[in-house]
Image 1 (cartoon, rainbow, N blue to C red):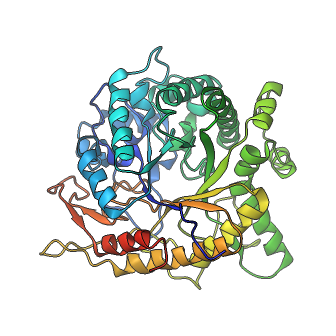
Image 2: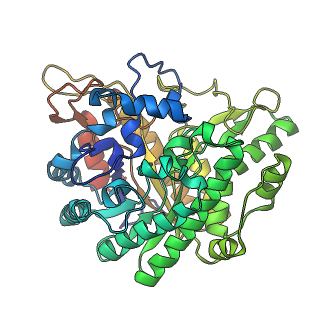
Length: 480
């Protein structure tokens, strides 16, 4: 195989909660990202947002703040009002596909509403029509952290089984409405990030449970069941639709050749990544996960009908985000699955994310060898502090270098035999950061003139990387 197939889908990816804004327009309800607070004194050196674990008291504090500027995702980049202009730019860029999410709280403002919000559906009618009208394949994520906040405060988040039915009902509405326009669906974004997105993804208030770690895995089980039942519904509505499972790939390397380091690293990769895709693609809980629960005295309620649904309604393709790899030592990194080290042999962004293109080829081979299903890279890119010059230019050669090397790695993986059908770099136009809630962490080919405090013109300016990626797409990856 020479390289990228003729119909390879070059794209870009965003999330509704990071770009749309309009947090209280169109009948939308309050969602978890609407209370994502920006720390103006943020320490960027690899530190996570301090609210990734949320308490009831902290949530009450955030809800009492009457200043939208402290919550950048409430405004985003105003994509809710500018999507036609932004998608026109993406068409000019040459994108073959565009990944975005539907904000659950726009469709069911409280999550448990009897009927969907028609005004929210009409927005997505037009958004998807615009994507399709510009010749781009829409790739729709149904849950990209946009959990209606009512499902947190009233039901306790995904640890409550009732969320299975609420999610499946929401999915059915979307499938029935858009099955003639949307073929590829990612049900839950980065389903494995329970250690750094547990409030965003699971909606669990840490002080509402006796054993937070156990509650997280109970919530994940409910997400597995919900995805399986949503897949069942999709196949009944339109069997041509494809359902994907998505994880965040952050493979660990063993720090040394010591057998303890090698095996402990393998175990960590199993439970932090492969566990989720094993369940959703292979259709059963793997033995190593059941042992993990037993060793930690976790009691996860799994009904017989849950396991039957998981077995029967598996994912059609695998998607993953890829930004960095990690290092693991049996002696130094023994405090849990997210206790890892940075690789001193690799350069890193100012946020501490290591740059490892070969790691992408490694992961593509690892997952394809394990599952043999079509693969999609749903996110990839370099967050950087871009500088807009006086003549409205951004000279981002560093981003071009990063993407070039990762695309080379993809091409080599395809030559290795991997069935890779789509590549969606993250944030093709600048959006609010998921992890740090800042605009300064920019990924785009298009600069959006909005600053961390919400000031700026909102104007869009093409970066140097815009013309470069445009040529990459036009030549199907031949000219890098």
